[in-house]
Image 1 (cartoon, rainbow, N blue to C red):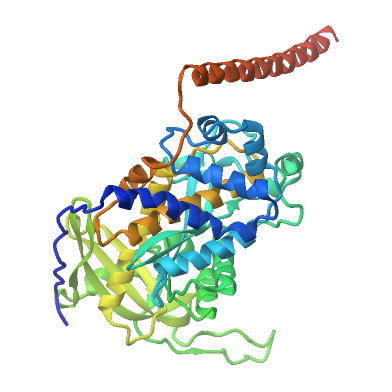
Image 2: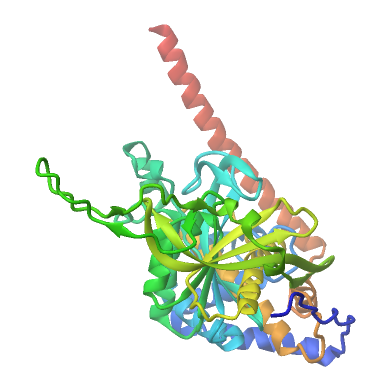
Length: 478
């Protein structure tokens, strides 16, 4: 087995696109949107969906409904209603989107990526908002969290879909009015993030059209046996990070049901035959791995050069409730620059899986972070100001469509420009997207809109403040 992998160097930047190639981008967008026509029942829904995608793909610094509508000369209220209140079904759109993802990126050994992303919000009017861990700021904050399903292959990566996570307090009586105000479905039950992630995978398989062989996720999901068992039940292989305190055995320990001693209840539960056969925590395994068993491998080419780590691969028995469970791959990944930094992974891949395939899959976790970064930076992932259940999900779905379109363009013109980034694709697309001329009359119209909007908002705030003051005065008089 080789002890080191040397990857090819990054290709030199090359862009042989001609103006006529870039001009084709607009036709590509029109053809792309036509494929979603069957998902909308009414023509105005199709028109608004094109408008919203047009805005998400444009050059506006803020890509919320108001700025998109104003920038394209559309009625703000009409677009707000389409995204936030119009009850068009998301599932038909997701089905078409998933089929197109399969055409662009699909590979039989593709990787489904399950992860979460957060958006910090002020106030408590937003659906699903709560004090919870927000990875975007690295601490507990008032925000919303979505659980997302991404897809990655050798061809590229993009988002499939992602529902909003509702914390358990949103299912308590204190939040009944918030459920109603935000339009949360009445039949919705609390689900943990691993439960949501598994449901996303099940729905994706049911839809079809997007082949995959692997599922990758971080330790929040990897530490859930139900999540991993659910993936195995689907006939897929998982590669999930686990906590350093996870317990394993090197070999299968013997178990038995203790003999009945003639009094009390008869024993029915399995126990270890030797009580001294304690499992090991995975962080104790590192020091026992011989130096010759470590494989130095380049995971991927990063923005600052190759990302190289040391790997060790062991077949182990997982410990659950101090009893042996499945035999699995335990993969150790050690940081070269800081050898004390070690990541641990479980995989249910077959024992004869080439270790270089496990190295490849370990590098397929990164695309989900890149997807979030690109979606936030290029297509308004976190720019929304919709506070309703429908508005949040409609926005995120249309963002997924916009991101995939950029990925699709990059793939289609790869021969002419093999190193195009998503930002560069969107920049070229923005150059051919039609926008109304922003002249003096348009600026005056925009100013009048802002003044009217601010005036109405001020009246509303004033009315609410006076009502609170009046109630306070009445209480003081008592």
